[in-house]
Image (cartoon, rainbow, N blue to C red):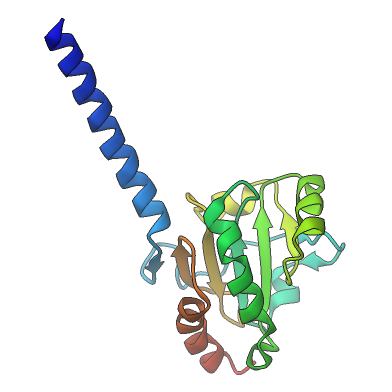
Length: 176
């Protein structure tokens, strides 16, 4: 009886350590500048914002693009939204394009946006873009240069300063 209780407790402890490590990795904020997609042309987003504007590589060309993959149920995603909005609204970022991309249904996103104005466009995605960009945790932010190449990917929530540190060099080299 004692042994069974001990083994059960040990199993629960081990499982909680593994889950804790996975959550920590997903939320710790890792910048990826050497992944397999970096330097490649981004896959065609083929998205439409909630306002009806198309988001394509052609519409992003000539602009540094920040694609923020998020969900309404994700606390880290919601907590970084004000920083993303402030970053995008900065006068020095007038040529930057920020789009929040979620796999949730447009109605869910519209309801969320009506309660919490994000300050940047949201788009619903069926998941193909996420698969092609290898999005495995939320939030994840992918940065494209003005030619549509993936130049950085950050996993986890970001502050405005962290986003600035990642995007500023790209803006400086993109001449936009």
